[in-house]
View 1 (cartoon, one colour):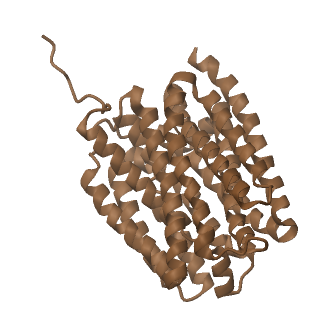
View 2 (cartoon, rainbow, N blue to C red; view 1 turned 30 degrees about the vertical axis):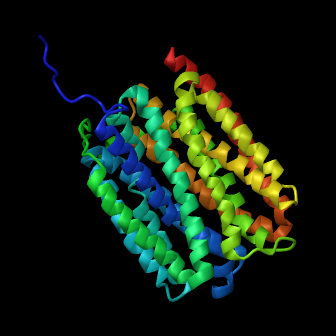
View 3 (cartoon, one colour; view 1 turned 90 degrees about the horizontal axis):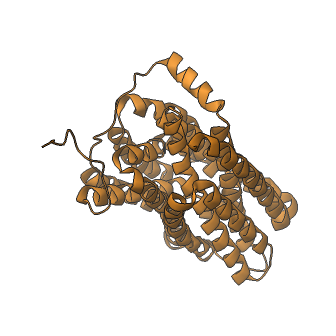
Length: 406
């Protein structure tokens, strides 16, 4: 009788599978709560520090650009030294730096600390998808990735809602400090739940090999298309929400920070859609599901052009559902494609997320300029153009991917 030669990958029904999905769901939640907690505070920060809408957007963009840059290094480092320690260090450091942001004495100091937060936060998104692809059985990896992306969606919602509500009650400093305390509490829970890696195989960290691997990834048409998708779709998504705070504060709505922040409740739909999209992609392929998600995101952008507040909220909900469906599928697609082509999954995920956060930084700042110059019609044109570009490259990626699967 043949004896098993090693542990089996985690599958639904396993206790370790449940602990893994819960831990990474919480990790994604708290990471993105810290990352975007200043977004609903942009009008308030502009008033307190006497800066323009485009300058206030830097409190988000400074974090996302350093996050994207750090991913380029942390992905390869995780390929060499492992996954779990990097994720845990990232969570604890993020909580501490967020508390420091709350004590910022000036606008330049706040931006420097928010930039430092981007480096700290990077340890989770650089590693999480690669960890799931290694530890979870192939049939359930897409589902688990979708749940992790769902945690990031809820984190984005919770961070924005909590910081907006706390700002109305206690001011912006306590709003950000509350997110920092939540981050530290979740870091402790994740430390207790997350299983250590069992299938990780270290790859020597060689600058020459890393350069060659990166160049090989950048020559891969599917990888390039997915990077373009992430830049455009994420850029459109963040740009819309960055400008929405200013729109809801202005006539005819005139909503306060806390009330305007409730529009981020639509992020709950993103958590649902990313998990469902992961399951659909297992049966129908990632290209079709990503195309459907992007089409829905574009439809939502068009609906937000209406003036009645219920239609604006509906448009934001459609945008959120579509974006997180496309992003959840594309995240797993990147790792799966890299594995099929014999490329480093950690580095592939890092390049994808670098483009993702670069899009957030560039388009998020551009939204401030578009709002100042043309108000919401300018923001609508900017975000719609980005999503149309994403749709085109996904069509190409799906065609290029088919021969490699054949």
